[in-house]
Length: 241
Image 1 (cartoon, rainbow, N blue to C red):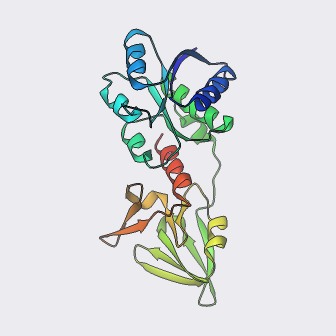
Image 2: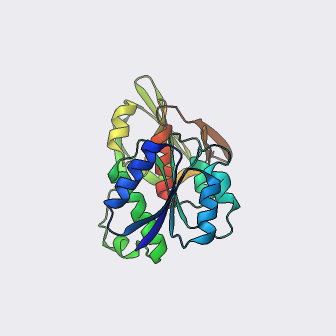
Image 3: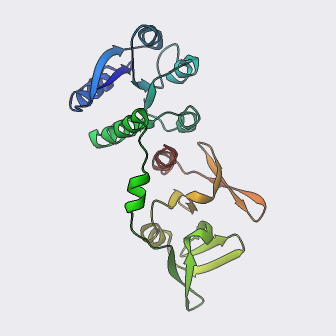
């Protein structure tokens, strides 16, 4: 049984997390705290495996609390903002849940934490995955051109055209961003802005406002649009953990 603690200053959010935990047979709630000081004392005196930690709390934030712990438990951040997803990445949190939190998303985060605690890997599952497509076709200058996923750095939209940026050049096609967003695998390509789709494998740095991609020896900075930030940051963390 996973021994858990909730650190949350919002009563409704606390109630929802507690309800979700009671529906999870492998998790036991041993303590509820409304601030970082109370949580710190509990962590010093109790054996805790998993902490559901709100970022924005009065006085000491969740991030400050986590940074102060020498041997922290597994942490799942809970917050209403995606602005601190990068810090969650750096602090090795198991996951980063954006409020309002669905039970499905909560369960997925708990499974990650459980896998970490039990030292499980996804090697067996990876071996069972069948071969998948590695390229797509696009009309370029009235010709159907095959483009490997691995060639693409990012895609830029210009009205009814798209520019496929590659390490060794670019292709221009009369096509829409919406079409490509739906056509390309979301596990590899992610729309981060109304004018940009990026290859997740080509990102060399990320912040809450931009991603950086190495384009022919120079760094290309691509903005992250407000409408796409939450989903993108969630995918960054899912790829990391």
